[in-house]
Length: 141
Image 1 (cartoon, helix red, strand yellow):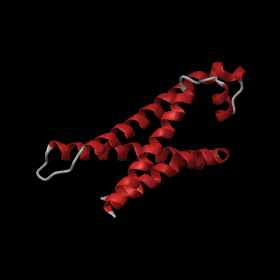
Image 2: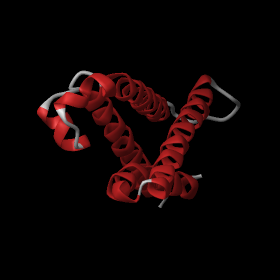
Image 3: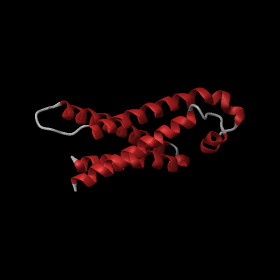
Image 4: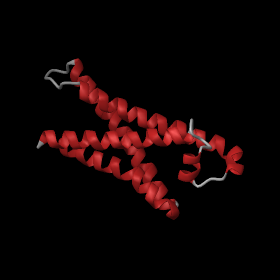
């Protein structure tokens, strides 16, 4: 059962990180593209005003997605052993990075859900995978 929760947590963590890295791509290199306009429902005439805030959000999404993914990779590379070995350190570091990233994603998704009723679907996409990942990590521990 322990392996099941670890794998479930790893999968949901990967999904959460991938969503944020995808959003980062939309907000930075794909800013203004047809996919960007469709996703965020923007008009080309507003892009001059929107570029800085969306690029800023892209940096946030890229950073939080990368942090979470690196934490997950550290956990997958570490083999826990007795006595505080470097592998145990990597596992703890990875779990801390992953947990922090998932908590930030969950808080941001909840904030969006509570403050923007028209964006509740996007909020659920942003918040549900981190919530499921955190629940699975807690069950694994």
